[in-house]
Image (cartoon, rainbow, N blue to C red):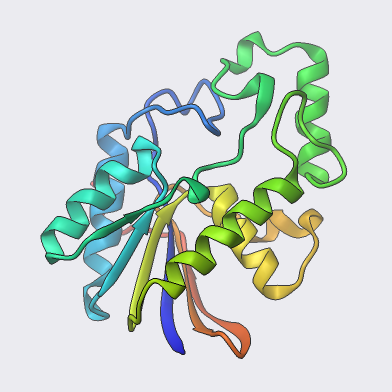
Length: 203
C-alpha cells in the first residue's frame, strides 16, 4: 500500500510569542488560520481523500473545516497530540526558572536523553504517535493522506520512519503551517518529496 502523505504543522496559536505549547490548548490566532488556509489551497493540485488531526484546537479546528469542505470524515486522534512539555507547557517564558531554561536547552540538544521536568518522555511520545499513525493507515485505503498536527508529532513520525535518533529532530524544523510531503510505502523507507516552509499568500 503506497500513498502520498502530507504532514502539516498548525499555524500560529494565540500566545505563541510568549509561551511554548505542548498539551496546552490555545486556539489558532487569526494569522494562524490564514496560514493554514494558504497551505490548504496549495494542496489542491493533489486531491485529498483522507484527513487526520490531533485533538488540540490549534490543529483540529481547521482540520474539521477542511474535512467538511471535502465531504469526508475527519480522523481525530489523541495519539497525534503534541508532547506534554511538563512544567513549562503553556507557561510564559518570562516566568521560567533558571533550571527550566537549562532543561529546555538540554532537551533541544537531545530530547530522549534529557526529558523535561514533569514532562512526557521522548520514547513514550514517539510510541504513541507511531501507534496512532499505524491505526490511521490501517483504517482504510487512500491516495493522499493529510495530517494536521504539531512540530513534535511530525518530527516523531519522520525520525521513526527514517530510523534516526531523537537528537536529529532539529533537522526537520517546520515553520507555522509548514509541511513535509512524502511518498509512503509500507514495504520501503519513505521518500521525502518536499519540505515547504514558505507561504506566499499567508495574508
